[in-house]
Image 1 (cartoon, rainbow, N blue to C red):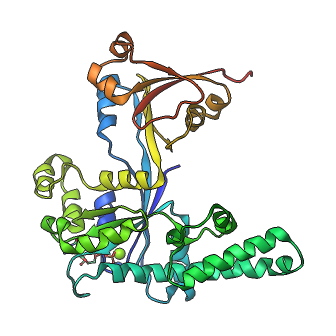
Image 2 (image 1 turned 30 degrees about the vertical axis):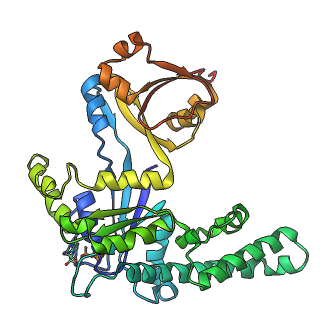
Image 3 (image 1 turned 60 degrees about the vertical axis):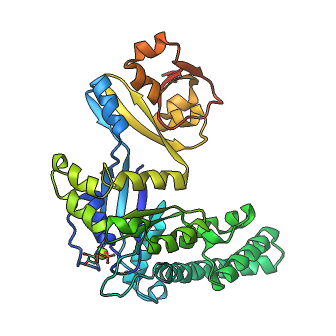
Length: 357
Ligand SMILES: Nc1nc2c(ncn2[C@@H]2O[C@H](COP(=O)(O)OP(=O)(O)O)[C@@H](O)[C@H]2O)c(=O)[nH]1
Ligand SMILES: [Mg+2]
């Protein structure tokens, strides 16, 4: 299933503009109330190269779903049904892309940390409600000697009190046990976040506003990706072959969607690997550290069950040598077993015993 990215941020920070740049969907940026959603292919120059080598009949790239979740107004988390619908979209996301206004606007001088904290307050208010509900559900059991319930209750209380101190769950350094206790709550302030510092001009990417946001994001181990959202949205409206000089003016070779997705992959610990042949070039996604059988299982469950071995060509060797045969001759086609951890860019061939009919 496609990785689900949710764009969040204070009203007017540039979410819809960025959404347009990423999806070329042309959602009107003034329509602040609507949720937009699109699935887009992840651009990957390695796929282009594999297609050149194999000339396959079919190509399946990685895709991500991008949801533009309209700005939450202060107090939304506890208010009405529209707000709760918006929050449910945040709950569905695998990773939140928090767009932060780093350009001056009618809303005044940029104040990135303040803006981010306001959005976090809304997430935390909603999380508090969720945790309180869970607490109310288990309190009876906890008081009548159910040890498990008592433990969960304690954990929920602790997470809750830190939320009340203004610490989003992702910044609380949760213990494994606390994580387990709040797992079913799917807390929004616990989701991995990637920050987009939305600046007015390329020079501002290294400017003092971004320099405020970056260390703040680092405190929670998150990346900050500086970007000129509006310029990129404009460029995304051009035919692909006319984009290069405008991208170059921003110091880029590609629209930022690729950069963003890669940052999201790092945040979530994901890697892409490939199967390639004349029939099909296919991009697959697994978790960093997944062993060969688990990765094979992304392709087909039979491949995991009947896993025998994985033959691996690193993408860089394949491209450097120009063909599978050349790689084999150079002795660079590796045979890996069940303990092999699949690496980003591996081109794999899974040998497996098919199930008996
Ligand atoms: N200067 C500047 N303005 C931007 C940028 N991105 C968005 N804007 C403007 O900010 C306003 C709000 O943008 P929009 O994408 O609708 O924000 P949203 O409310 O977060 O969806 C619009 O007038 C945009 O043209 C940017 O990178 N630089
Ligand atoms: Mg919008």
